Length: 275
Image 1 (spheres, rainbow, N blue to C red):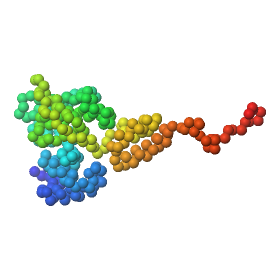
Image 2 (cartoon, helix red, strand yellow):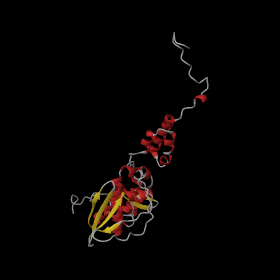
Image 3 (cartoon, rainbow, N blue to C red):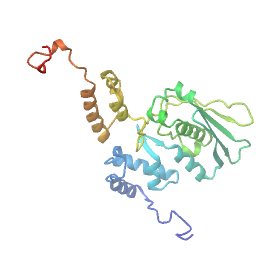
Image 4 (cartoon, one colour):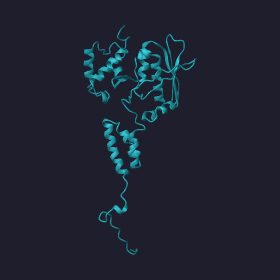
């Protein structure tokens, strides 16, 4: 096959652990990597190796994998891409998608019936996912991510080998069922990794906007837990805005607390006016 016929012919594919390590050391210095990965050669190496096991190139591995608590965490899009690339799926598609309910369906080659997975906003509320910024801003996309990843793991465990997606948190139960039959028994609950990790966290509604919108000191105090999750430049900006908002929302001192020396002098009466 010529280079023109094979899109991966010019890709950099390390052939042994030494080449993988050397490449990881070089890439870990890149400013194009997420901030949390820069300088972390072992994590970059783990992503490259995890992706190679699934047939992904180096850059595709870095785009679709994260390492959280020593385990591979993969994007839902990456899962579907690996499954379709494995040749084991006849199709993997969305059946229905709204801000309240999303259904995905797939047919594994060799199976008689397709299987589906449904995620609803009520399920997200029971798991307290709807309180997260990305769920509040993009409910349909987050429901779709959950439906894709759960369906992918349930039907193609041999392809994914236990990967989880980057938005999952808390115990989760897969709701996969045969289209023409009764609901299949859900697999045992898994201890899903808390992996709120993304290269560009959603900005709307963001904690920065909420700081600017705060009207009272109580409003600002309620934002403190969210501020503790920020890092880097966003944390510095949040601190600056928080200080400015505190000055703006500060309660004025009561009149009796103002000393006569500090109080502004009364205006002189105009000629002809009573004093």
